[in-house]
Amino acid sequence: MTISSIIWTLVVLVCVGILSVVSRYFSLWLQAYFTGTRIPLISLVAMSLRKIDPKTVVHCKVMAVQAGLPEISTDAMEAQYLAGGDIERVTLALIVAGKSGIDLDWDTAAAVDLAGRDVLEAVRVSVNPKVIDCPDPEAGRGKMLTGVAKDGIQLRVRVRVTVRTNLSQLIGGATEATVIARVGEGVVSAIGSCESYREALADPLIITRQVLAKNLDSQTAFAIVSIDIADIDVGENIGAKLQSDQASADIRIAQANAEQRRAMAVAVEQKMVALTRQYEAEVVSAMAEIPPAIAAAFLRGQFRGSQPEAQRKPIRMQHLQYGPSILRRSGTADADRVHAN
Image (cartoon, rainbow, N blue to C red; front, top):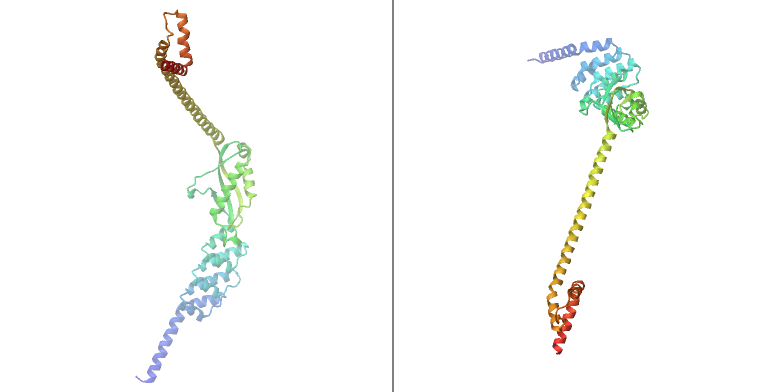
């Protein structure tokens, strides 16, 4: 093979490569050129080498230019694409924001997109406010909020909160769940501040005015537009129920105190019974000393013939009255006399 044939072969291969490249990217370049985006053909080729879809970039650039947005650099779109962002939704969000008069630039929208938020949906909610049910039925916490007025009557309330996206707080701001929780706390607090449940029934705006005055949307990604009472019902008489429970508790305490006093009385009674048995035992012991006393009296010669009944009783009663101590002393004295004789 001669040198000239080799050169012609290389030229043919180069031409074929150029034609393939031109056939692949020429239509995109032509579309970008006639829409005023002015993306060089070599940049489209370089996008493919960097694993970026040039069709997506060209499409987004065309949308931005046709919508009259400020110029967005191709490098910014490529960086967003390589970072895993959705440049189509970011571009659409900018278009919606521009048409609605909302101040939103590419850097903010790209940051929101990379943070995991749906920037297009956020802009749409900012334009068309969203209605949130409080409490959230999908959270499994029931369908009504419950609060108790000062008179003890329970009120069940279902609230609808209208919010729009606060784009300035979209990065780092609290989510929808925080708004629902704060509104629920505010509603319960507002019901509790009512002197009577009739106040809330007569004018439900009392609840909404107090909740709106607390600035519950602070540091959240939403701005509260309005709070409306969708439904309000009267629940149980919590105050009466608590009083009934307290009365039952007082009854149980009184019964326990009475049982304690009864047990103490029974203990005192048993103590008295024991003392009675003790005294009876002392009486029996004293009666057992009577025969020795009689024997000692015979030894002293005090029984010399029969005595009238009236004279014997005082002696017996004396023995029973003074008990074993006197008999013991008398017996000891008689024994001393016997020994002396």
